[in-house]
Amino acid sequence: MQGSGYLYHILPQLRKIYGDDTPELKQAMKMHTQFFNTSNFFNTIITGIDLAVEEEQGIDGAETVSGMKTGLMGSFAAIGDSIFASLIPAIFGAIAATMASQGNPTGLFIWIIAQLAVNVFRWVQLKIAYKQGVSLVTTMQHQLSALTDAATLMGVFMVGGLVATMINVKIAWAPTIGSVPLNLQNNLDMILPKILPAIIVGIIYWMLGKKKMTSTKAIFIVLIVSIALAALGVITKG
Image (spheres, rainbow, N blue to C red):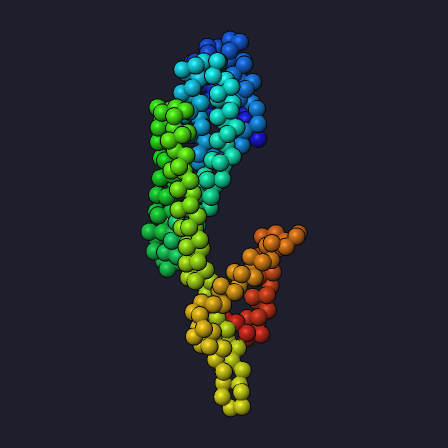
């Protein structure tokens, strides 16, 4: 999937290592077109280690490089995508969107700074991986596990916070028992504040677990149900 792209961005360095139009270059190019698929945010670590090995061992390190790429691409894909493609955009996107919705332009700069920081991180990790080479794989193993656990916990925490702050809906329907109106929203708040947004998210999560249900279908269902219930006076904006 990413094999040809990986070869394209590493090819200038391969030419410096093996020379132009040499058998070693052709062999290295063939090796790097093999299947490769990992996170775009952590692929620079693999690139740095690859360059360090090939500069030191030449084409004799082909098996080492191939094994390293195969062994790291899966774990790095999971870690990189969960942190940089899900967690960071969710956190900084929510902060930026909240500030922007309140008319604060700082939210825009927060989002831009976050993206710039990610790109700087990618460049820095390339340099570190190039300097340390294969030894980085063993030294980072436990740190990556701890980082993944911390990111998962923080992600769950942030999702809970987003549910409570970004889903602004409450029950408007107030049935009357005898001559006394019953405020359902107040009763729910006494049981658990923000329980309605949590229930809505739980229902959507359950829906997405069903066969043939996609996020697009879920969005349309939420829109239709929300409009219908609001028109009937059952729910309103919180």
